[in-house]
Length: 443
Image 1 (cartoon, rainbow, N blue to C red):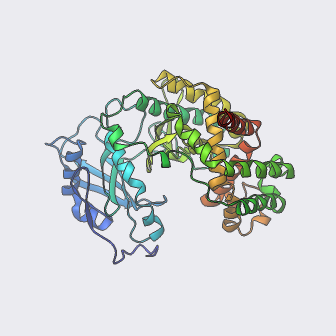
Image 2: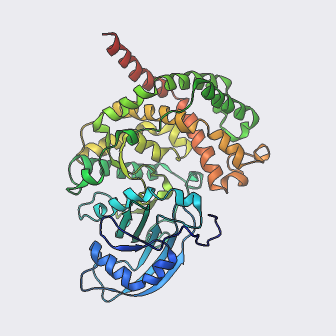
Image 3: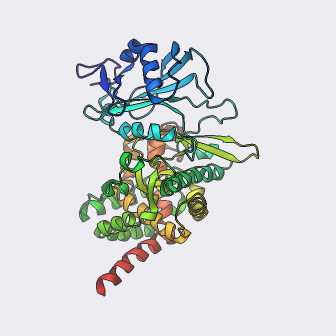
C-alpha cells in the first residue's frame, strides 16, 4: 500500500457491523454509492432519527485531512423533517485507510470507539461528546464506521480548535486543563456509580494487561544507553530544553530511578491496577486537541471530549498522563497538585469513591515513572530523526519544530516527562510503593 490515495487490491467495499448487523461502507467510494439510503437505514437503526424520518439529500461530502488512523470525511445532509437536536453537519470516520498501510494498521483503535458510541447517546451521559449518529465495527476484518455531529470550531461560541503542544499560544492554559480534568473525573465517577448503560461492563470489561502503563522491554544495557542518549541530547541541543533540564546531575538521578523502575516494573504496575477505586472507563488521550471549549452563562470555561479511539477502563494515572503530558510546562511545574486535587474532588462529588489527593498523586507519579521508562525516555531519538537541523534551531518554538506537529509533540512530551521527573514527588512516589512492598515481604 502507499499514501497515493488509490485503493489497493486488498480493499474491501463493505463489512457487516457486529452490533447492528448493518452492511457498512468501508471507504469513501462505497459510502458515496450507499448515499442517502444507507444513511437512512443506519440512522434509524441507531435511533438517531425516527422510523418515519429519512436522509433525503447529501449536501456535502468532502475529505477531512489529518489524523493518525482511518480516512475521514465532512458530511452535510438534509432530512425529510426536523427533529429536536438533529444535526445536519456531520463527521465520518472509517477505521480503514486502504491507501496508507501505516494508518490502516491502526484500524482496531476504532473497535472500542464504536462500542462507546451508543453508550454516549444515553440521556444522562455525564459529559459532552459529539452526538453519535452511527457506530459499528466488524472485528473479523477490523472494519468500522463512525458518524457523529461535527464540532463547529470557531462558531456559535465555540473556540477555534487548539493544537496539541501549542499551549504557548493561550494566554492562560490552566482553565483549559481544569475543564479537561473535570470532564475525565465526571466520566470515571459515573462509571463507578453505575450511572452509565446497564451493559457497560460487557462492552468494556476490565483488562488488567491494558489498563495501566506499557510494559518495560529494555534490558539494563539498553536502558543505560537510552538515558545516556538523553544526557548527550542535553549537551548537543541545550537550547531545546529548559536550563534546569540540562544539568548532568539530573541525568544521574534519571538513570538511578530508571534502573530501579525497570527492576521493579512488574510490582509497580501491579500496584497501579490493584487499586480498583482508581480504575474506570475514561479517555486515554485527553490532550487539548481532542477537545472543544466554550464558556457557560457565568463565563466559566467548559469542554467536550472527542476522538474516543481505544476508550476502555484504565488507571487514573493513565488518564491523567494522557491529558497532562502535552500541557504547558508551567502546568507540569506548578499546577499538578491542584489538578490532581480537582480530579479527586470531582470524582467524589459526582458519585465516585472518596480518594485522597495524596493517594491519587502517588498513583499518578508511579504511572509516569513506568510509562516514562517504557516509552517516553527514548523520545530524544525521535526528535533527532524528525529535526535533522535541530542544531540550528533557536529553541523549542523554532519554526522547524513548532510547525511540525510530530516534532513538537515528541519534544514537548519528553520535556514534560523530565520536568515531572525532576520533582521530589517522583522519588517520594517510588519510595512510597516500593518501601511498603519491601516491608510486606519482610514480615
